[in-house]
Length: 223
Image (tube, rainbow, N blue to C red; front, side, top):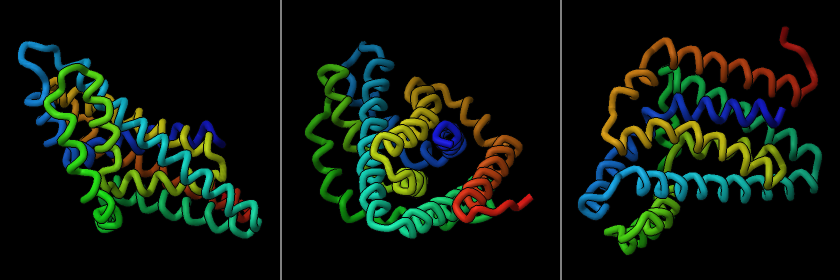
């Protein structure tokens, strides 16, 4: 089931790349101004995204550890966390499928922390080397995002720090191709993830996986 969670998180990251472009597209475009003249963009963009994904993994490990504490206290706590993650997965399926946009409101939860982190990122620009883009990306990995928060509920329900980090790694890797290609100025790729058929296939797959999680949680078969 862990491998399925990793793959599902990968799909969310890939399908949610359009949302990432909307939120982080301006940041990716700004990278070109922070990079020294006549320097290749790719090493800086890669370092930025490694930093961003590293923050996702840290957040996944932390929530997985919190889930472990909760499940050690009570078996009912585990069932509640699994139910919560399944419901968030269904909400993600509806969001990606274009049926519900409520995740946008969840992003507001992180605005209070972000107002303190955002100014710190400016200390790392302009980039003298690709290594300077790494901490910059780590800070921007904490940008409030409904997709990130929803995927973190899986890490929480996993009840394991390592598994939680693995789930968020899958999500981050899913967002990586589009983010890198956008940084390189290749925007045609967004047409693929924007295609209605692609989004609907991903949405249905995630919804079915959410139902599978529910059957595991409550021990009954839906089919």
